[in-house]
Image 1 (cartoon, one colour):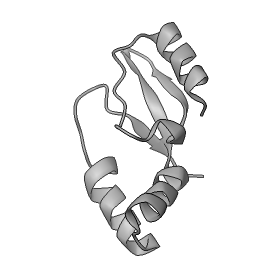
Image 2 (cartoon, one colour):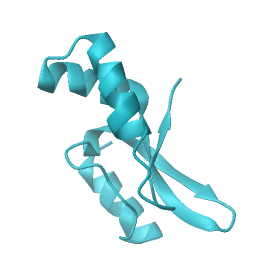
Image 3 (cartoon, helix red, strand yellow):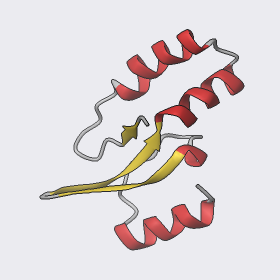
Length: 85
């Protein structure tokens, strides 16, 4: 997602949504939930591709890193979510 679109989302939903550092291009939108904060939604596929390209990981290594360090990182009610197509 282009930075301008992310800025528009932040403008519309507030700047208190949590983002993963360095993964703005993997944001595909936001998720609105009843009674809970709006959160950023990342593409699992884009995150895995980024890990393989930037960090030189194999698919298996990227999946393991993602599962443990990103998908498995709970940082409160504003923790981003991931969409797997």
